[in-house]
Structures are given as structure tokens and as C-alpha cells.
Length: 263
Ligand SMILES: [Zn+2]
Picture 1 (cartoon, rainbow, N blue to C red):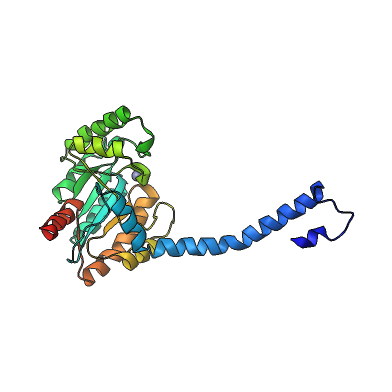
Picture 2 (tube, rainbow, N blue to C red; picture 1 turned 180 degrees about the horizontal axis):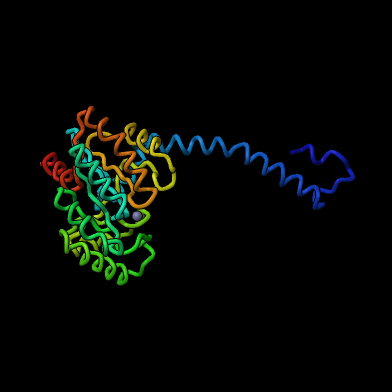
């Protein structure tokens, strides 16, 4: 950048010189961006186990994954039900003898009752993802509790939910204590292909297959285009997981294995 200050006549405080300096800085950042992007993608694709472990150690009350040697993984699908994509996802799960925990949005239940009934009848698990898909960490504690119970009431007509997943994945101590007071456990996951942000079912499938191991909790999303991508992702990963000897189960089924392993 020293090039800018060659002539005596040029005053560095002159707007044009500042513009030049700014342009050079922007140019250098733009060169670094593709590199940052590649590192970011690599990080997402090969989710480092130590980051997940660090997060998990910080919050014993939140389930990220389960310690087990058995080739079993939990599949969790957020943001349904959807009248178009959820039935297709249910058919694919049935075809591959896989089970999932559906973190459902309370406000999406009306009109989709038959789909929720079908999910329960086919031994999938219904779980609480609030009335709306929002970052519930921003809610005042009383409001959080009220909305948790509203979605609990809606979902309990189908099956008693046991798991809660906060929108955007953010939670605090207060939320965890409210959850446990109402018999809930919080669950995040350990294999997340950032499927809402990266619109490629190929990438989601590869990322899951690269990172999955016994006890993993996989996160995918339902509804609209995301639901269609999840369908394509499942059609790729379910046969491959079966080939590798993995059984795909609900969160509750997987968490029971932790208890067996701990005893
Ligand atoms: Zn969500």
C-alpha cells in the first residue's frame, strides 16, 4: 500500500488518496473471501468433532449426540408438518425402515392433522419446536413458558412430546430450567449439513455421510423447497447408511442407548 505515498504533493488525508487506500483494502479483502469461503465450506462439510465435544461439555442438559458403540443414529427433521413434503418424507422413511423425530411447528398443525396422525402411527416421534419458527431465546421467560405450553397442548393431542429444540439453536439456563419443569429435554444435534443455507441435497448427503458415526444426531429441515431437498437427501443417505449397517431411529430410541451404555 506504500505505493500511494510516492509523491510529496500527495497528502494522505486528501479524499482521493483515501479512496485509493480504501479500494486497495477492499481489493485485498475480496482476494481473501474465496479462501474464507473454502475454509467455511470445509468446516461445514467435515464438522470437527472437537467443536461438537466442546459445545456438548458446556451443556450437560442439552443432547447433542449419544455415547454408544452401536451403529445407531437419530434422524431429526425440523419445521414441519408440510402438506406436500411431509407425506413424501414419511413414505421414504417407511421404504427404508427408518424412524425420525419431527420437531413440529404448532401453527402448522391445523389442516395437517392426518399427516401428524400418520407419523405417529408409523412410529415416528413428535417433538416441540414452538408455535412459530423463531429464536425463542429472545422471548421474556414468562412468554417462553406460555408459548412452550401452547405448542405442547397442540402436539399432545397426537402424542406427548418429550423433546424441545429452540429455533436457531440458541438457548440459556432459564429456558433449560423451564423445559425441565415441564418434563422436556432440549436437543440439538451433532451432524448438521446447514441444509437451510446451502441449497444442495448432494452437499447435505455427502456432509452427513462424511460425519456420521454411532450415536450421531442428524438435523434436516422439512417444508417447501427445504422439504424437497430433505426428501432427496434421505433418498441418497438412507440406502448408504443401511449398507454401512446403521439403524436410523428416533431421538428417544437413541437416548435409551446412552442409558444402557452408562449402566
Ligand atoms: Zn426451525
